[in-house]
Image (cartoon, rainbow, N blue to C red; front, side):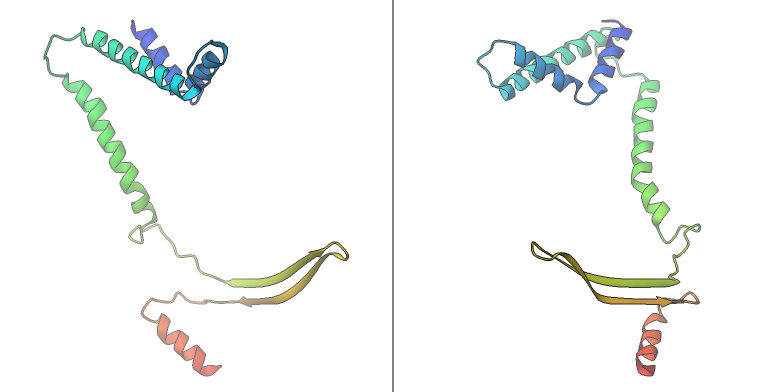
Amino acid sequence: MDFATNLALKAYLAVPFVEEMRVLTDWTITRTSMDFFMWMKLEDTQQSLYRTKRDFHMRRWYPPAAPRPAWEKVLQGGLLLVGLALLIVAPIALFSTLNPNLQSNRLTSASLSGNLIVQSSAEGIRQLLVYEGSQTSIVSEPVRSDQTFGCLWLQSQHH
């Protein structure tokens, strides 16, 4: 079990559904009394035992009970912690209102229409316009959240 074999096995297992297709092919052409799900459990157990055997073989490179090297802990543990922290914090920082690059999306126009579509065997498909409306210049100036209620109240009084 050299490095190249170990790397090839990891690459094989990383490709989605290749292992499952191999197991399904084996089950299909093998004469067995097991159903497919039992066969999958057997293959999974065999693969787990093989991985454990390979891990113990790789552990022979280090003296018994020797601590793991610092470079391994920094590369695997440290980079994984940084990656997970970025995965959690980056979306929050990117889409947060505290982001100085975030700009509000101001509405300049809107339109709404509603159609009723009726299909019958005698008349085919008929379409009836139920509602259509549009508005432009919805917000000309940015509105602060503390002014929103007052503006809505004033607009409703003028109509």
